[in-house]
Length: 566
Image (cartoon, rainbow, N blue to C red):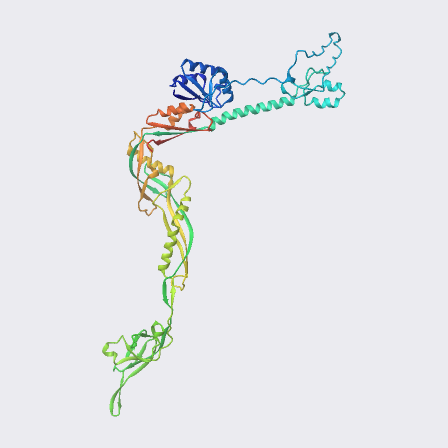
């Protein structure tokens, strides 16, 4: 025999429950009853359910943990199970607790004395009762004021009168006065209860909300469109596919050490004097910087210009002799190093023609002062490499920090991120000596961002043109879109090409659907939404969780559409 489960709503009435019972197939039916259900608090309802099950030839089991419902079910002979699939039992109704002995008035108890009608003007004597008497069925003990007075304890009587109630008739000298304090308290609590009840229903009307997700059958569409972002625009143009953009900027200071690789000659140049010897018959003028080359190839240059006269003829031992003209000038080596400390030697004047170099030449004295010293220095290549290393190491973290500066409601456009460096400084500076160095700079990150709502509106407007007015976009594909940015213009405008896969389908008017579903029960709303064209599945989430109906206002119902195939 196959068991079928029948679920009842918390506010289900007996007519609806019997109707559902008749529609359930199978010979056995398990009715799942919410704990807060009020329908099964009535024994009449349970008898009607039992009769309906018997008429339909079905075996009925109540699935509930409610003690009252279980007790009533036992009285009418219905089986109860604590959960679906559990063993059903027929519970016996609990008998009422017998009254306590002291609370029962026996038949042979003496009657209280009756007043004598002939002595109407005389006060009736107070009946003799114990100082403390017990009220029936467990109430608090009360003090008889008359008994206290008779016992000679007026102080106790006045104190007890404020907090206790006497058992039996208590004669008094005058009429009873109403307790206005108690009345005020009752009115206050009653008013508070009314305010709470009204406040609850008002809050439920304004604060309840529903989220409905419609899973509809959609068709995949390849989208290929373009748009432009203008950072100087104050408002997006949906029809023109122009988005108002914002340049997001973030900067941070970076520093790091690096090893210089350059070298520099820090030696000194040798120097001395050069005697210019001219055996030519014409004079010569040599400008500053004239080169004189030693036999080993090292060269010296004159520090100043020098003039040497022509050679003269003379008779020595009756023979004609050419007397050379001479002039002295200071010279300096062309390179640093102690190798230029040349001894006295004959120097060739490289600027003269070879045929004249044998007649006019230099006679150098001992050169001195040259030293050799090479040091490590910072080069521009070292600085550029250290800068590139710092930027590459910080790129990922900098990009993350840049994205965190995108304003709320905006979306950064991929492909627009840029990283630049400013305030680059090296210590030691370029060409300065040092075996270690430190580079500091300011890394600047920028990217373009647009409002998410404007972005979606522009893209969807372009997609709508492509799919046609008769269809509706279910998924615009922005989450998986590929952007290809074009080169930025001088004005800052930049064009983008967007490709993605979107989904479209039959039109579903969210506003109209919300208006149709407002105020409906959860089950009825789910059934109605599931019958919409193209809708394959429905998910409804209500807040607060205990409500069973959708809000009465359409504005509190939020509907989203997703593609069922996704």
